[in-house]
Length: 264
Image (cartoon, rainbow, N blue to C red; front, side, top):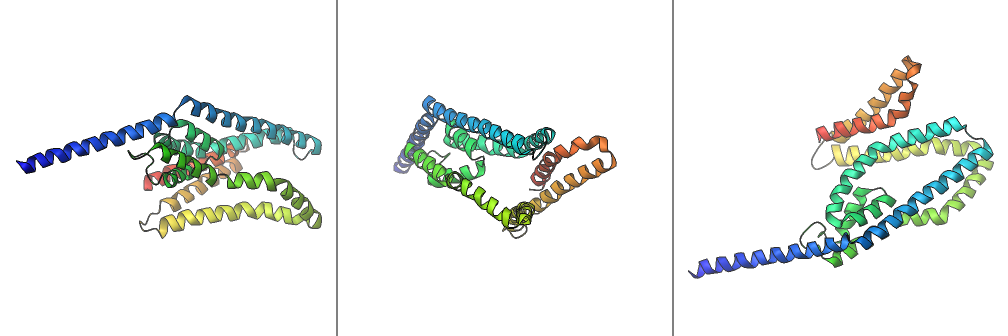
């Protein structure tokens, strides 16, 4: 009889704890999705949009003054850039949906809208909240801590760009005067080095040499490369389909995502 009563008591205590934890998380998400939070997030996003227009006007003015490229090339560059961002944008959106369930919509919008790396923000939210984000233990204090870690963790490159861009521009002019080919070589090899380092990390560290061996990253890399090769082959055979080159990056991203998802 006593054992039965003890079991009933423990079950009641457990249920009460679950209710308490659930109320704590509910309270946190109410704060996280407060209208004031939405207003602040939209102000941040509006600031980003305004900056985009400012940079566009400055770039357009610079091109007209220097005649570096034609207006047709500008339109093509914008089109290629837009198409190339579609694939990564879908990936960011998928992770952002999961992040919204953990820290709320406004904070997710504010962070992903500035940095664009939902994966980083999810890791930062987990670290800042002590691993409680998305769990019943996610208290308001943990939300505040997560917001601080996400903000400070993503502030580094923004601060560097703010203070260093002008000096980097001067350095570029100085180097170009000393040896014009240096800038050309840097422009050619820098993207290759960045791509190689990222590919090595994904294919080797997270794939072939990972604890759980998988060929998904390697297969995704090959699929993306093949997509670009196929597009170039088609364009080489039929010049009327030159427009496909503008979509090459988009095709590569989609092919890599599909193959990687299937094999993972």
